[in-house]
Image (tube, rainbow, N blue to C red):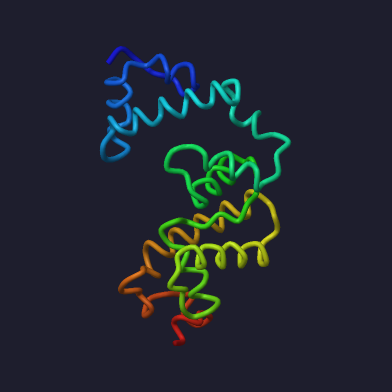
Length: 173
């Protein structure tokens, strides 16, 4: 490897595909495919946003920002919301994509059979319960993710050691 690639769109487009794949390898499976997608994304950012996606999103409504992000490969509502929140672009009610059931279980007792409905219900609970401040919503996201991965798992939830159980509709059921 010849050195660092850089994270701006120009650097990614100039990068050797094998070097880019090598840099992406620690991040998961099929780094060659992810490298190809990253190059597609960089090209779109250059062509549609002049190389600055954040600046290109300025002035758009949250729905328009979400829609713009969903035009990129493999970005759906949860990913777009996570980008908006963690990049500090909009303090949206992002919900961890692998555990939208957590908040719904706590409040309603059982998650919905439809993932989209569960995700939207969890978002609404965050909207209703937390101020639209980025730091508050980032903390909520991280707490929900941690709780869902460690205790409130989709299968085999650990109700017996859950500190929220006394106030949880799911644990009561």
